[in-house]
Every structure is written in C-alpha cells, then in structure tokens.
Image 1 (cartoon, rainbow, N blue to C red):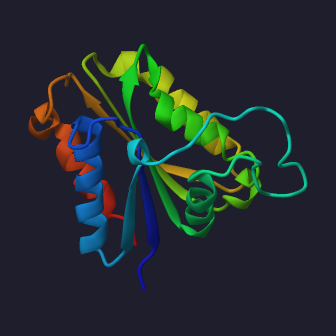
Image 2 (image 1 turned 30 degrees about the horizontal axis):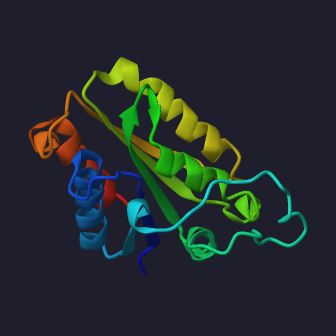
Image 3 (image 1 turned 90 degrees about the vertical axis):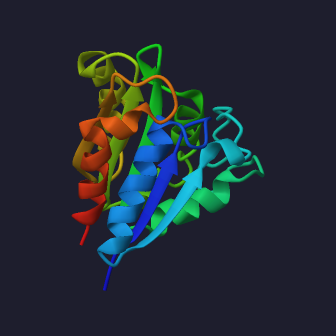
Length: 178
C-alpha cells in the first residue's frame, strides 16, 4: 500500500520552474503506487496570520478561508513536499503565509517525510537560506524527517528547469517514496 503524498506548490506561476519540479515528483511518486495530491497555493485564499491567538486551545483559526482544509490535508498526509521559487534569498510569500497559518495544528503535522524544492536564477549557494527556512519549519513538526532537498538552480524563464539535473532529481525523489 502506498503513501499519501501532499505536494504544496508555492509558485505563483502555474507551469513555472518550481511547479514543473512538483509535477516531476508527482509523476515519480504515482508510478511507485502512492496517492498524490498537489495543491497550488496561488489558487487558494489564505490570509496572513494575525497573531491574535484565537486558535489557542481550539485548533482552528478565527479566519475562515482555505487554510482549514489544507491543514487537514497536511495532518493526514504521510509525505509533504514544499516547493517555492526563491525571491530575494527566501521563499515566496504564498508559502511563508501558509507556513505561518499552520499555527493552530502544527503539532498534529507529525511523523512526516518531507521533501523540499527550490528554484532560482542564481546558484545553489544563494538558495541555501531558503532551504534553511523551510527546514526551520520542519524542525517545528514533531518527528518530521527531511528526506530530500532539490535545488533547481540557474533557472529564470519558464521551463528552463527541464534541462537541469533537478528535473531528474525530482522524479527520482518521488519514485523513491514507498
């Protein structure tokens, strides 16, 4: 029996380089018999955390938007894939906003295998802060294990990532999920 894989694409560009790597991961994971769902954050309505702590003890946010359903998917998944383009040496706003909004239930997002994907016009060195920030989030998730980091470096225009090693790496990482 396969695992439940949830891919969270933070890219604002459907078909952009980080989103393409998500598709490659998805293809590999499905071929290995896993159930895969990809969420495109740009299509969801998720407001920023208001730091009101209205969620304290309730496990639900006072804001009524798409985050509640996404949190439920994150809790139920066995594997999480977080993907982002790199903007000014960090993850994009959609992914960061989503991470902040896990506050009501982040302790329930436990024992996950996690894969991280980042793409940037610059090289790997300039992307390490982004990976560190995403790993910082996973450090807050009980029992989370980062199983892979995929660097789509040197890509700017749509589809450029298809001619990089990251394209194959994403597929292989998905294929290895068992």
